[in-house]
Image 1 (cartoon, one colour):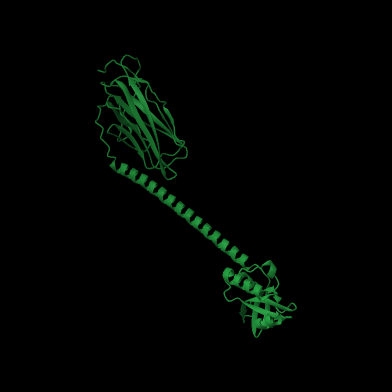
Image 2 (cartoon, rainbow, N blue to C red):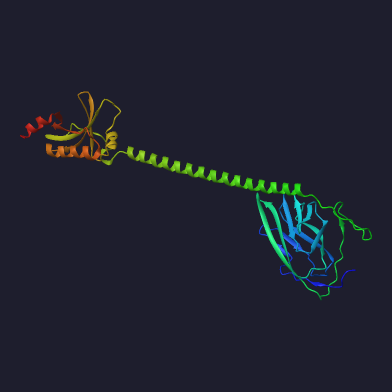
Length: 333
């Protein structure tokens, strides 16, 4: 005969838990119960937009037992004090309810803790929300027992109260749990692979952008190098001017396509570059000096500072090219 004792159950936390990923679980744990009594516990899951693998679990304190009532097409188990529902694919719709019969041993008293968690896959990642309820059990309170429906776990059909109570078989959920574990691992692996692909794509894009910028800088430098210096926009003939003058020759070539600008850019010369045809060669000179000494100093500067190692002094008399010796004699030097 059932002992005429009652328990006052105080839920420290609310029966409704809000998930960061919009999942919600509502429970109807009784506010009070008697030791040795059985109560139907319902867990209503709200899951807008969530599908695929999921697991709902509650860990019962010592002295509490659970048997399945409504499973919503899940694999139910109660082992090691854990009530567990496993889905490889959640039920359709935004909300569903599962339930189990909770039996309290007559010896239970004091504060009892129920830990629970709802885990599921979203965006290829495992999401988990944990919740906890604290139940205080004490003798003296009055609370009617809930009407409980006993369900056969094999057929999920109500059992007539007058029928002899059959010992319920323990379901073997090892395969379902293994499948669930594989699903979690596959989701984690896929998320990792996608993260690695995204990183590789970002690195590739950054490398291509760096390469493009470098090529653009090199192109701009090359174009700037080809630009004609202001003082040599138009190549003039070296055979100009009156009297004796000296210039510095920087190049001689047979290439008819060569321009004064080519050598001005090559040697970074901003002075006027002159072009002339002389003795079957196309020659390029720089400067216009009245003394050999000034021309020679300029020649040394071109060799030392501009890399024009073959530069030498040339001379002209009234536009005609002559030797430097002749020029010096004409100047009485």
